[in-house]
Image (cartoon, helix red, strand yellow):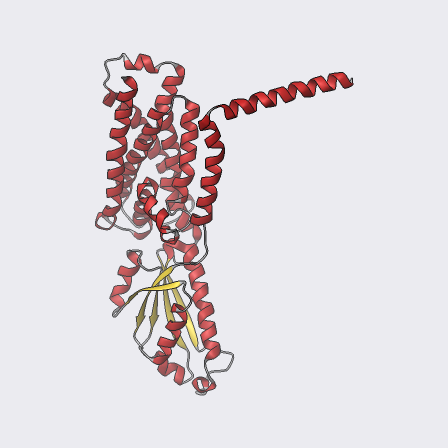
Length: 381
């Protein structure tokens, strides 16, 4: 009995050693063991954070009094809130929010100081960008804490007009645009129209040629009359169609199951999704041309998907990321695909507002598709 147990354990040990040798044999396999954990750990640490570190805001101070300046000084002194603009008219508020320059706009009425001196309530208007509900909600709470601290420092003279001592002198009136109740679902779900379809589209494109190689049919494909460009198009179109189909399914669920209202044009939404899917397929086909097997293609794809997700603005705003990562996001098609979807779906933006997001997608497609075609020809030769 003991001898048979030792023999069994020896066989298991030999199998473990064999598997470890197989895993560590290739340098690329050793890199894959370490690189994803290292890369994802760094990206999660820097990119996936809800901490308030940089909140751009604009102010419309119609009071321009000592009281309003003292209150704004408290806000500026936090080091978190960075004043992006000082507005002179309420008509400028929409431009700051729509362009994403400011997460919130603080409006101070002209009679702010007079009301405080008379012991009356002085309302403070805070307009939030509801497209980023998590950060907007946290920023709103932070402003509330600052105002509470300001209220605590107001002397008895300011309340001598009759306001009870336990009644806050300065009150906040919040208003969130595009997402009135700051529901995180409204921010996340429309972005999934692009994000979830990207996973399948990228994987299908990456496996297309790799599957042919692994099954031994790639050589047969090469002897057909088809040119490399025809093969490329034939591989790209099915993945694009599948991506659009998946986007449609997600769109219908969001619109009719969860009841999130759409404010923009369906045609423009699909034009953006088509451009986005072409750029994604270009990346996938480049991966496929580089991979010699389906296993390699899947590994490369999954290695790429996580950084694309983290650096897209899906979970946290791009502007909260370090400068180096913000620059890296310009090579990420998901960032601009989500920008188009959110702009059209939530804001009701037209082509005049979202066209800048199309340019990086066109550039990515113009780079990756010819690159994939060149790789095909190179492998053929």
